[in-house]
Image 1: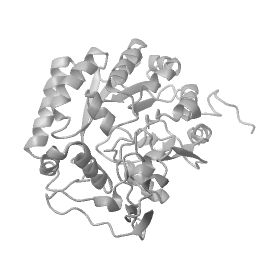
Image 2 (image 1 turned 60 degrees about the vertical axis):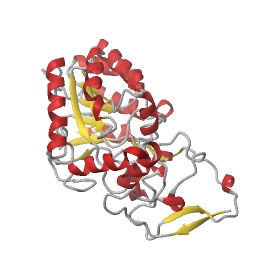
Image 3 (image 1 turned 90 degrees about the horizontal axis):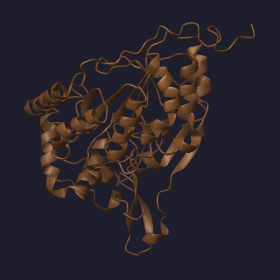
Image 4 (image 1 turned 180 degrees about the vertical axis):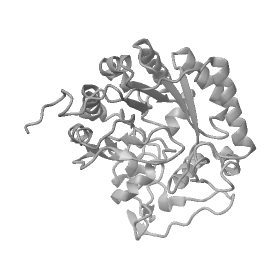
Length: 379
């Protein structure tokens, strides 16, 4: 039978190909349709637990990883940041964890705060903030609240598959629409087109913008890296539908994976512009904390012949490390290769007319709940 073990996690050394071995690998049948191939313990856990075959067979006794959703009663939903290298200072995430299973997701390490693994747990153990809309309305109505653009979906995707049933993101948008509050949505899902009836009137008032993240146009690579996100073609179709509805749409070429997807920068921008995108941005692959181990395991499974090259090029842009979290460097990297990516992106955008004029969202129409005709107070 399979026996759980308690073993220390040893990081990969130097530029050698690490051997994750059977002590952390999860059988393919158990993780079918998932992005991560391992489920390492979070960094706050005192022991590292993993499963290995003790030679007695019985691997089939372990069930496949199934998606489970727990409800969470949030006490607050608007998160604030003072990072100088991102365009927003507040965000909202209706869910914890993300079923899209993007193997490179920089948000994976947040699951460690829940006592769960940033690996397969992140994409199978989900939390839904069922009272998000109610709490949002309360926070917007606070006497001290001053409106600024809220970014929706910065940590996990607001339109991941469970949104079809839960509809928490839609409830949040309904609150923002009633209050005339500006919002920018970032997603990899074509499900965003479901809410065009809300977003189009908001966009007409200068209150809404949508950004579709497109990592690759290669369906096979997309299936491997982001298994439950919308296909590249469906994301392009979503750009077209949103644009036709008068909603400002942008494309985020993110993340750019060196030696895997970096050759597609121009093609992604051309396709997005053809389908109606008018703005564009990019982010270099980020591998913070546990994401590094998870992504390396992915490379060994899917692109073993490129492993050394991908890691070496990435480290050349990260000061010799897997990741550099310094502001100003974490999104774009440094060095000749990073410079080349930046110039290619800029030249393609200029040629395609992208970013000529960026949609600026307005805060002038904001109606505070309980004070602006949205909801009257009892006292």
